[in-house]
Length: 236
Ligand code: NAD
Ligand code: ZN
Image 1 (cartoon, rainbow, N blue to C red):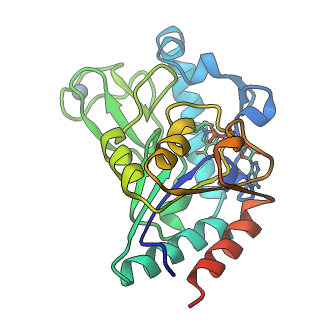
Image 2: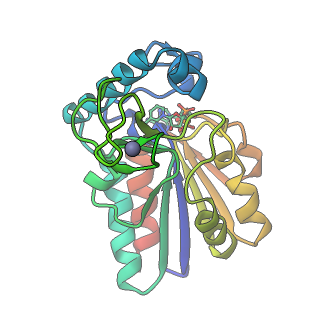
């Protein structure tokens, strides 16, 4: 394997075969809700009870799904690359926990995590396993109604951008898996990686909005494409 440094970006498409609905596929609705209602700070301010209920349902649904062969293949690739002393970084836009349950460790949740909450009052961030509501008290500042899902909503700044930019600038290969290329800044990662000399590959069910920027696009379900691609690059 001649590749010494890989950055992978995943989106909702990698979890589709595990049974988690994607986003734009259903006309801008997320699990039958308008994005403005459940994925913006304004939506939370307007109806916090609805937003808590929505993310409680998403969090609860994680117990009914399992990682698919695409998640597992990426964990296998991470282990193999790290054993060789090479660099591997997985950046996900997903808020589910299927990458970590598939065995990934070098993982950044750039859009947050269903299993985390934060406090608008004191900036506390911590693990969240059960449900939240407008009555949930912050364990640090004891305020009520300040706890919100630790999800990066539209109009908010994604997490880990400095670290991701540095990795994009130094990788040999950038791979985008199961993302529509509609949500920035993630949609621009391919151009950054390319500008700094990386090869770029897209694995998706259909060409994404940014398909033209990739050196190569392979179309098909992630559960088939990703394990085949990982097998090929791990071949001696
Ligand atoms: P998206 O829903 O906008 O796009 C999904 C992409 O995956 C599409 O291009 C589609 O063609 C492709 N796809 C669908 N099934 C596939 C399969 N079996 N194999 C390969 N590709 C497949 O998703 P996005 O680009 O990640 O943007 C959506 C935003 O919504 C993200 O920011 C994310 O935080 C949030 N979201 C997350 C989840 C999750 O955590 N699983 C689910 C829905 C939405
Ligand atoms: Zn607090």
